[in-house]
Length: 305
Length: 301
Image 1 (tube, each protein chain N blue to C red):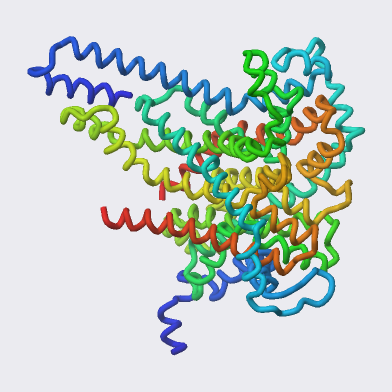
Image 2: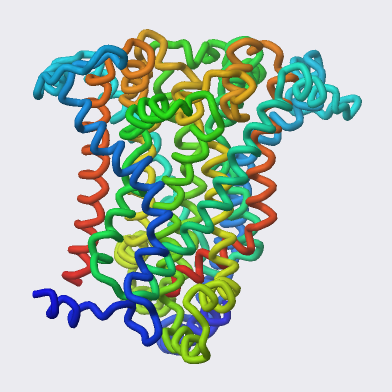
């Protein structure tokens, strides 16, 4: 057994390389990673089965936290809000970028790196700065948005966006769209220029119109990029925290409450550590399942074609 | 572009019998219109993307009255007074110091550790690599919200709450997760013969790594470093949870609390927001070339 393993896995794989050397290279990185990522994952799962306020000893209560969160109206509200935000963080940016790609010339774009740099700016900015800027833009009295509406005679449209029961969530969502669309656009522009121009010529010869060309060549050709955009923006929508924390802190009256905010409040404001962990486990599970499904579907499609 | 023209000519020759000569001109006109349209839309989207940042950066130089008067207008006097006030009175000097103290070690140590792990996974064969490598990938997929609770209680047990370590150590751990994937991707593209030749010449693996592989990996390492810098600089949840002393707060956290107290002092708030955003944007714009080169060199595989 031991000898066969030795033969299967040559030590180091090179002459003069000491066996076990690879582990020495991995050890320092792995230690800190295990201590601050791997162990906490297991601990979160462990906490989720306990009733714990963070101070007195935790008490094992089995699946009670999970049963409780299935009934919790606040969790339901938060999940629903995350789903709504998904439309703004994921669907809008990708749809917008695809629409643009359909209109786009397939010629090489001069100064592309300049546009790319600019479109990416929201991506490299701290979400806190984004939040501060947009809180100001949405400000009811001196915010540019309402000023603009008043200036063009649409005074009745001006409203306290982030304090409005109906408009707070879409207002937060639009910021998500603003953050995400440049990313999707840059991704798709690069993708289109990779596609073979001959395909389009052949389609034109067959009498295919613009829309058909887009549907049968551009869209399938962009699948890898669409997958990346989908996974990235879906994760962003499901775990959104910073932006909501700064913009509305879940208000007004929980209209913009999201799951990550529920975790934070339960764990660090009201001392429901076990319960917060259960919500965290569910959120992580949703994110992992969604990302894996998209990636698996994509891989299966690749394997079939 | 050349390919497009060639293809276009090919197309017209094929269609020569069926299509009248006029259609060639119409096609060209259409292609030109499309190019113009592309630039117009690109410019609009570009302005929407950077507009809010420009407005806030402009506001940082203005007085309250000037901001209230015309948001888009230029200040009468380009004054750094708001920045000076934010720096000294709104304590942005302390926040800036904290951010630097946290970000510099995170970027350097994470790059160093990722080079080591990436080298092992990319160039060496060893038992357990098929199990260890996926373990490193978990950190890329798991959201911070899922681990922040135990991280807080572990740090409390280690007496590290309200220290820089509480922000530095977890950020290194998360960075190494991505860095391992990134550097492995790069090192596995390096031909083994190159490494073998060095080994024959009597170079130890450590010397081969630092004298031969890393100098060739500079674009990839720089890209990784920029990503670590941006992520750590902008990190919010971790400092929010593990630090409560005002003088330890990093810039994004400081800005949050500042907004809570002085949300009506717009010029000051604008100056603060500009100071938080500027370093990441400057680094990104300056390093964009490396950024793209690094990304493409990683994608070649």
